[in-house]
Length: 421
Image 1: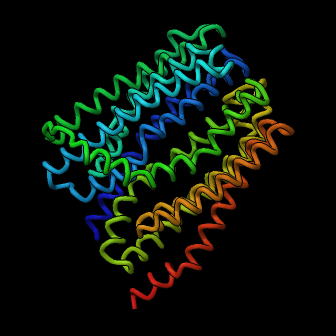
Image 2 (image 1 turned 90 degrees about the horizontal axis):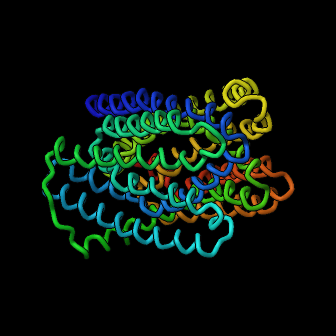
């Protein structure tokens, strides 16, 4: 237990520190871009990034969960690790190719995409790096520092390229180009570390195993896309309904919130492999662990959310400037979203997923996100960026309620408690 706790703390702390550095570097580009590009062009860049995020989830395809679990279960079997790695990478390449064909169809058939085809294609370029960076492999091996190194490389390269190339409003198409170059280089480094640092040999992918991975990973893909669909779609809907400036106000507030959320993600990622193994070994042992870890994370999330809410006016004025003060109410609502997001990770990923309640998890996620999507369609036309933020918060709060009711009604909590008696 002590060695497990030490490994979790080491993984979480190293990733936490380096992720803070990563987001600090990434956030450093925001004040520069919003001032050079202005709300409309910056909003257009955010719109394109949001569209491409759908395809990022396609190539990730739940392998961040499924692949992580398979790697965690076979950490000391290099032959099996090599097989899993090459099968997953093959699946991701196949999905990336399918995504490229889909985006070409969208460019040909959707007016807004056709008008900004260069921006859309350059934004899609980061998919290549997303495929190459094997973060799911590092998480399964519980070697989080390699993820952090890749992220630092991506964000540092991106920042340098942005500062060197984006000089006027007309240079907005160079922002995704900087992302594409940085992600590609970091992805190549990521692949090198798998072979050089972990000693994996080449293994020909087995098509039946690739298809099996896609089939078994579908539930995690569906969960990931439904979990984030409303959040992404808010930005896309704003672009079509409210215009690029509204996207700029909403997207810039979201960037600030995501920088703070980076403080939570490393810990959740670090404890998941341990939660999974502990749940498989002993329900009572898992309950003791998650009770302590969950309480600490909920308290930390509450402090972060309250800090964002109280400092939103100052933060927007300092980072974004006077032209973006319309982002303040959006940021305050996103601060509330951050708290519910953290609670839902504890009840959902660290609990239901670890006890193989994936179907229930997916159903509850889908119900909450459909509610959020419906609210977005109702509120965005009338309230623009504020409506988008309120819809997101409402859906996440409803999701917390759905998860809590299921855990109680299904008897999962009582089963875990009885196992210790």
